[in-house]
Image 1 (cartoon, rainbow, N blue to C red):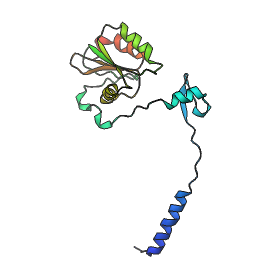
Image 2: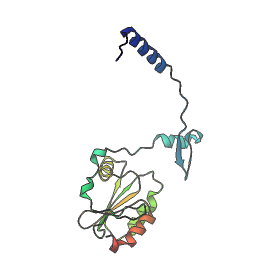
Image 3: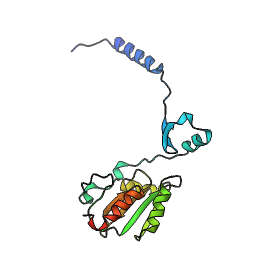
Image 4: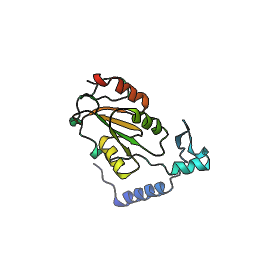
Length: 172
């Protein structure tokens, strides 16, 4: 192993610091979904840009996710909808936001279902905390629970809900 003089190491550190101080980057292009399609944020009108600035990101603590061992076996269904065995849904928890364009149809659908449930606004602290506990990362999300308190299904749209509730007796 060869050693270098301290002056040489100090000179290299000074050169590296100077190079880092003079780093020049380029502007980052940000795309977001607006009115059903993705578009560059810099091309949005003033009103939409202001709305974008007020959006909140879902950030959750992974340490607060439910324990995977507490769940029962997950169905090997190829659909995106996760169905967990454990009986017929007897209650639900629905997670929504006031500014969510997809939430009203799901709310309307769930108001017609004969299963009791609770709605959480994820913009509130209590709603956000409950969503974090269940590992929910998008709105709308409806979590169906069985008679044992286990998760019987999870859906993000009326189509997903129809698919789960049509199979209700055959969840396991």
